Amino acid sequence: MKALLIDAPGKLRLGEFEEQGSHEGRLRLRVQAVTVCGSDLHYYKEGGIGSAVVREPFVMGHEFSGIVDDERGEEYGFPKGTLVAVDPAEFCGHCEWCEAGHPNLCPNVQFAGSPPVPGAMREFFWAKPETLFKLPLGFDATDAALLEPLGIAIHAVDLAKIRLGASVAIVGAGAIGLYLLQVARVAGAGEIHALEPLEYRRQKAKELGADAVHSTPQELLAATKGRGTDIVLEATDSPQGPEDACAVARIGGKVVLVGIPDGDRFSLTASQVRRKGLTIKLSRRMGHVYPRAIQLVASERVNLRAVATHKFRLEDAAQAFVLQAERRDGVIKSVLYIQQPQD
Image (cartoon, rainbow, N blue to C red; front, side):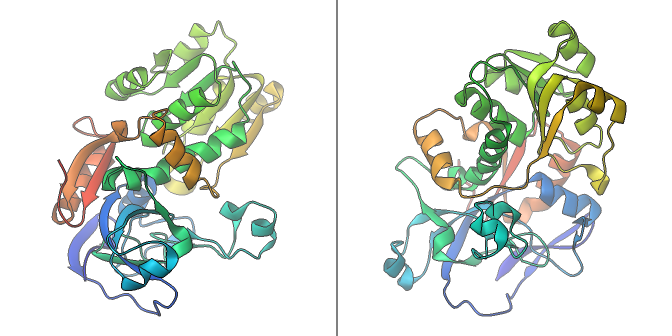
């Protein structure tokens, strides 16, 4: 089948891909849309994230949708031709963490698009029925693909345990940050500040409901009279992001780190974190949140499509990666259409 392959950092090509292993217990999907995630950019720029390293021609992509292209789909409630959202994570279901209700921490997880498990930037994908989700009327292939990053935001906001009326800072106004902003509002946040160095992303944050936007931590602190905010949700790819997040948190505040930093490293000023008595949590993917994500979009409480700024055919995917890696042309998130671009 046709697929987008990465051979090494910065080297993408369209080629033939044949998946190894059995498809038993899986349904064949005709992949429709795949969105480019920050983790895909780490594979593209650095060749890996921690121990997940691209060692051979690899297929990326974990934010995706598909159409059931399998006669057996009817047996599982997914008739052939059904548009579905796909959870890229296959949890084992029986480890200590799965049984404790934290499947996102499952050490046995098979996660599409994370080496060595091939992802969805290809024509066909075979998925377990339990990872598929039907969609309400009005959802299209792009919406279905974007449910995954929205799910990441929902999980992070769950970790934050936002009290009604609590002040919140969003550090980083990329796709995840913009979803965090909206979900925090739904969760009952009071004043929401967005911290983002790029002007066009600050503007997007303002459009999506931020009460104030700032380009530096100093600006945000000045706006809060030096106090900072009760909750900080960080979603950047910068090693500086966690430090900035802690800088704008109030004394006794809570910080949730969602972003994956370039170089897989970040550092914090110990005295600042200690003297403030901060609670710091790191967010790892998500658990079973797709039904909630679908409900938030269906009820129009989250603007899902606002982050999908650029659209490409799979054949033009290299342009999408360059554009997004360099943050040019007002890009927030690029969508790759495997079958045919949508208007």
